[in-house]
Image: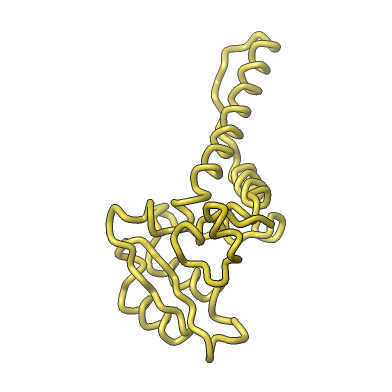
Length: 167
């Protein structure tokens, strides 16, 4: 599913994020940067214990990633994902789910059988997420960083137009 959809899938049997997943995430996204010896990366993570274990923070240091805690109840203004793209992503995923339910209802009605809700397969969910992320405009992502004041080098005209960055 990862290769087919061009994404990384993290998980464990309990369905909770843990420090092992934090380490896998750091390794995949930051360990092999060509400039990792000379340039630091700032990673804003919410104040979840698995993001800041001794092992995770020590590993982040070795790959030149600075972990910064977003205080509880502040992600909505400090984390670009919460500021800009989580809402449209969730709305699109919700629409996919509702469309699936509607198709199942129509199918049951056409076949004159009792309706029985069938959940989407894991593969379908991964497809939904990958397609939704792919369709998200780059400007939406950039604007999240802009609104959080984390984007250097924003053109002056973006400042004057209310902070919206256009492609």
